[in-house]
Length: 186
Image 1 (tube, rainbow, N blue to C red):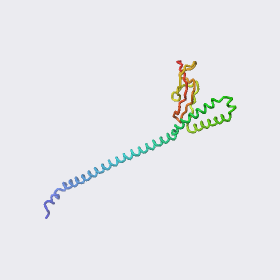
Image 2: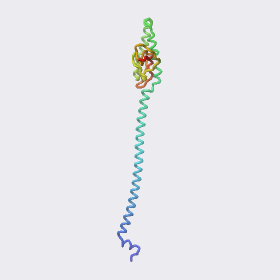
Image 3: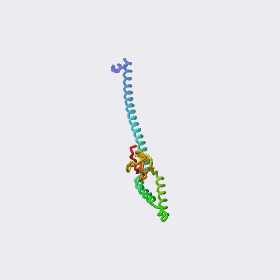
Image 4: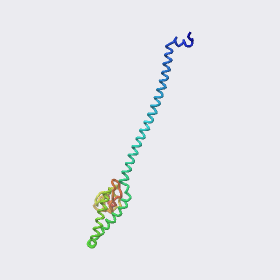
């Protein structure tokens, strides 16, 4: 006949079903746990990927900004050095008397043409002249006060003399205009 040990499970089918159900639930719980672990790992890698993508985009934007700045301002040292050439040519033209103009007309005309070409090159590369005039208001962002003096019929802060023009490279100051400023109290 049948073995008494094996007959027990036939006597209680509900207990056998409960045990089988418990075993299935244990397997499901282990599967869910493994699934949750995989989902957490996926989320971690997704987060890392999104951060790496954002870092790459930021690096691209930074390098584009650096490239634009290098293009616009990379020659600022050379431009600053060329300002003295401009100043000297301007002084040479201003110092020429009428007598010298008649005697050395072609020479002075050559200097004027060279000066125009220099200004044209400046403009081509984004260098603009800051040319304040007597009577304008002093602007510390664009002008450098070389001296102050009380001048009748002026207000404090008015430009009374322009010693040298200033220059901007795009939106940056290469050299402030050098000016004298009125110090009248009222």
